Image (tube, rainbow over all chains, first blue to last red):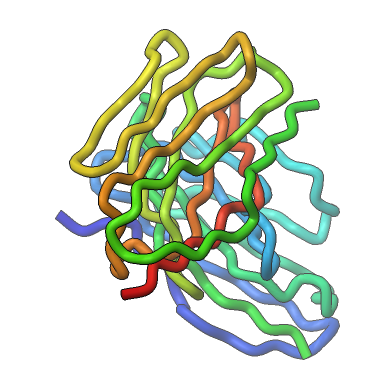
Length: 111
Length: 109
């Protein structure tokens, strides 16, 4: 059974550009959450989606947006990239219960 | 506002030692607490989850305890091995996961 898959694994963007990160949850999992992990810090919550509806939003600017598709996969979009957006972006999926399973992350570098 | 702290920030031990990693949180109203392992540049691997009604969970050489009243959890690693070298993160769950900054563990032969 495949785990949580994220794409791409790495990418480099220029300041001001836009980026889309993708996440496929574990089969049967209906909840997807996104986290940002800056080097040396713990992950910070960005969004949670359940059954295609936003269930939670962290303290991030409106440049960050996300959506969940009918197959429960999800995209995270970041507009007008800043140098400070450079981080590891993690996606987690869960069934209904408390276990959260994370993907390998997307390493975003903004130059 | 929930805050999660992990001590120590880094730990270096010889192979075979038993060790304890600490996690503290400020608000006891949590659903559960999870311990994760993170290898450099990689995602998170879930190690143990303790429900708010539980006191401890065990998996192999790992044992995690939870004391909600004091806002503390410990991760005990028995007979450490070089392959245990990684960053260990604890996270408390209310409606989302709130992480500590991790303990970077190095086990040398």
